[in-house]
Structure formats: structure tokens, C-alpha cells
Image (cartoon, rainbow, N blue to C red; front, side):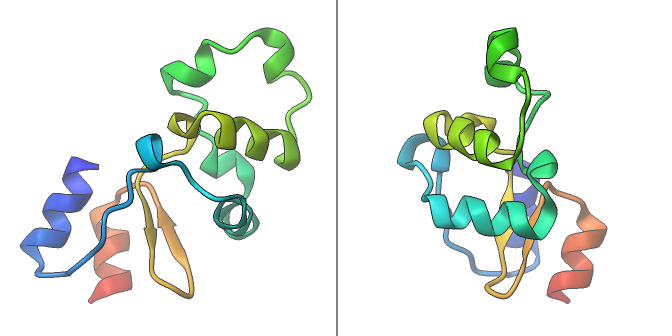
Length: 102
């Protein structure tokens, strides 16, 4: 998150920050992101919150179950998600930001 925000600031790109870890996220946004990128990309399996789930909770994951997990615990959503209106970027890669915003 910090690298993405720094990059945006350094390039003079205005943005609104939505902290879905504290403010939550709506189902429609998650569904849109999962449709665009695949739920496997949006769900942060490397994070502590996901790793603390029981084997039963991790079993038989599909998009519907992943969305329910992310709605219940937004810290399982990979960050950052940069919403460009017509599309989104997931994760921070300077080259992707440059290509999308230059």
C-alpha cells in the first residue's frame, strides 16, 4: 500500500483512499473484481488472516465462498486495488501503474 501511494503521490495522481480493512467492502465491488481478475487473484492466500482459517474453511474454495470469506474478513483481500473506473489493477507493480496511468 505504501509503495503504491508513494508512487501515485510522486506522479501527481490524485486518488481517494478507501481502507476496506476498517471500512469494509461491498459485495458488488468484490464480484466485479473477481470477474475481472479471478477470485484466486483477489483472495490473499499468503496473508495471516487466510492462513489462520481452519482446513474446513479453506476446503472447496470457489468464487462464492471466497467472496463470503473476504466480506467477513476484508483483510483477506489482496491490496492495493486501484479502481480506474473501467478496470482495476490488483497489487502494486510500477510498470503496470505507469502503463495504465501515463
